Length: 61
Image (tube, rainbow, N blue to C red; front, side, top):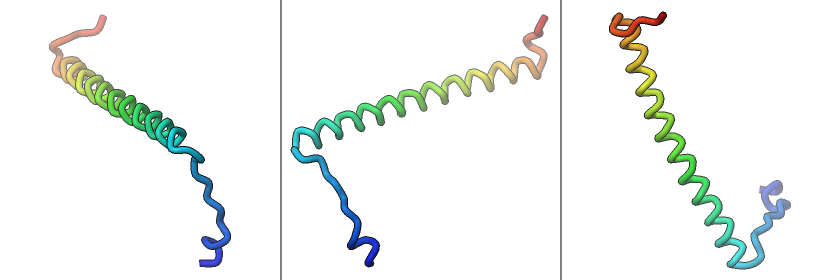
């Protein structure tokens, strides 16, 4: 309790600054979600390509 009582926590001073921070964080979340979706698609394509190589449907020269 003593450690928490001595801590100072700073907050953005204005509502406009808080809104700006929230907007930036929301944009970052959207970017991360888009990248995760893209990664999942690329991993799925890679898995399909590896399956084709392993079954012999496609041969490497």
